Length: 444
Image 1 (tube, helix red, strand yellow):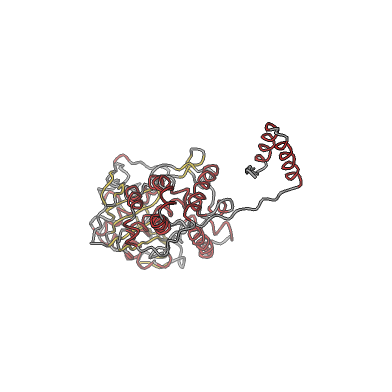
Image 2 (cartoon, rainbow, N blue to C red):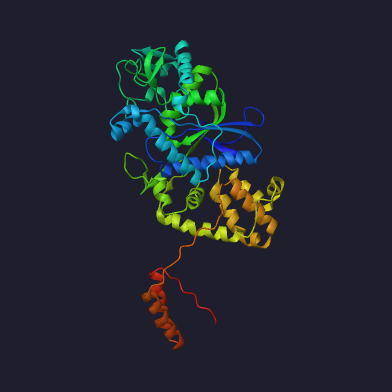
């Protein structure tokens, strides 16, 4: 039985699909105006494991993750790079390509649907028109705003009270709005710019696309909506207002959010300039080690990103690969994996709100058993590959260049050992270790 922490209720709940064995999962995608960073990697690895786990538990899953390929930040990046905001499509395509490559490197499954906002404008306009028609949204000079007072439940996800919200950093004052908290569904543009709509030329606001795309690809009501916790307010709060404002019923049954990636105890963000791209990290570490690093941390706890920590985790991953390398998982059928004693213990943790650290703890506690019992080793390997998404391919070993200086030290150490000058031999061994060489003495 799968239990997940539902942000909406603040409780860990037993997962029950809305409709039989079918699961509709939506995860907010990227705005492709820069390279994906380690925060993106954490989001999509964690919810890739959720997707894989749901499939392993024999649910029929439809997974949608969007590309917001029209947005203020993207237009600004196009101006910065080319001097023309109309080049935003080329900018978006470049970063979508690199993102797709990064996700493949991390072995993230391709979602069932990966819609682009620019390919879905008719569905978005239809959604907005429905809100205008039922009085939940209004039009002013070609702009369309969602009227928050028309949705009294606003704040249910973020636990903020409507009467306590004030105009702040995320909410700009605007004389055209009926309420300062009202947010844009459609932004007007000059004649001929972007798309024609019932309200004139313009483009979608930031929040509306996820509501419209979820409805279009998954339905009016979905099972799980997931993303980073930075999206709880305002993005996901606004999604609820839009979707429930139009359809009059709960939008998502479960809301899941992963915690921030931090650098030096601060939230990682582009604005602070303290973020690392996945491309940069992959030059230092194998992507599978990075994936394993994410899974060594509980998704709801902040992750204090550190290259030293990844290096330590890499050693554990190498050990796991070595233990399982002689076993073949391809020939193990699903029933055998489900019946594995160790896999059952692993599932206890993984089904308890994606407790991946606890699950990996079971694996390492049973390494001895895996080395003794082939059928258990094959089953565990299959589970780690298919559900955790770990390739378990041994990492390439870098060949060390033995310089004349190193050879001289080795010769001096051997001379000291023959003379039984163990103190001198130990000193030279420490020198070699500092230079990156570990010496192992054998009886012969």
